[in-house]
Image 1: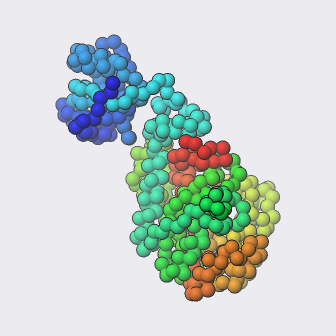
Image 2: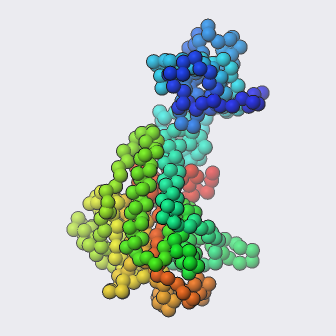
Image 3: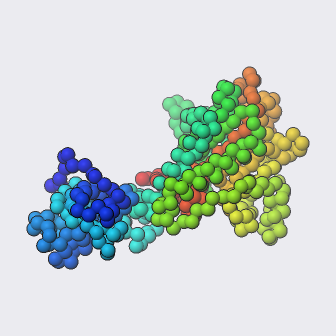
Length: 439
Ligand code: AMO
């Protein structure tokens, strides 16, 4: 039998228990991180959201019944401890709690599928299989506090710039980013697809007169990649702005990135310390490198890349060696960018598209868009797609569409740059990749 919460409520988190609270009564709630039974004295490390408190029970100072109950506890069980704070040179945080009452709320099964101390680190697949336990480790939960702060900062920043948050469908009838990489689903008697990007919707919102919109939502990519940088479900931060061009879009993105990094550094220093990452606030302006210049740069270090081809992984790696931090690649060939990207009016073989890179990792793609209906139809056809399947989207370009530009940032890749993590799976609570559909 386990105890119930009844009227008992937490008075403090572990982090809030300080040595100057001597003799103060506290009620702590959490998991049993570690137990040491030395015969005449029992030590229990109680772990909660972001800290650990040592519960010290000398047999001479606590009741026999309480002492025996403590002795029976199992690691990772959930408990409530009411007790008095004492200063202690040896305990974590310089404090310990002498227990007066113990409630066992939920007993954990043993052995655990995964160790919760920071002493050992299991393989990523073992960790993900038992993700809820993996997340109990402060070095893992810290990643998600950093991601949460980043998303919070992004929202605050865009709201401060008068952007309206929108929600668009994640089930649709056609592709947005070209014909491949779609997950088909059964939609009653028809076939439909999971959304690859809110691209077409955010553009239609420009014809609706909203001017500045953003969406933070999942996108689904049926890419067969099995890399440290690709997932099949991603959280995308999408932005679209009317009466602007790609230069304005890059400026906005640069300001947003610097703001988010600054906020993470300000509010998540404990989490950054926990994961041991020295986050640097990027210098501005971010370098802007023309595509052709990038091709020459990678060729000059012995990596072969043709002018006109998409960036192979070897070229990304080479750029990652040359460039430190964030930089834009601009002036991409029109032929390798999606149909909605505006060709450069001076040289239509080049486009008004850009990528934001962090060392060897693409964080974002964006562009000024085509807002002329006929040119858009022509470009859709040129890419081997059927304009008829885009008729509802295309209609938005026939009744007054302002020039517009925007971008999409992958929240997980951005989190990788904020945490120094090399495997994107670590930045998602429950990742979806080629091999993983559970938990
Ligand atoms: P793109 O397809 O380049 O552009 O995606 C934008 C950003 O989303 C992230 N991303 C991914 N992250 C992890 N795994 C994936 N499989 C994956 N696919 C994409 C990357 C990438 O830079 N509609 C355009 C954006 C725009 O022009 O507004 C688009 O979706 O960080």
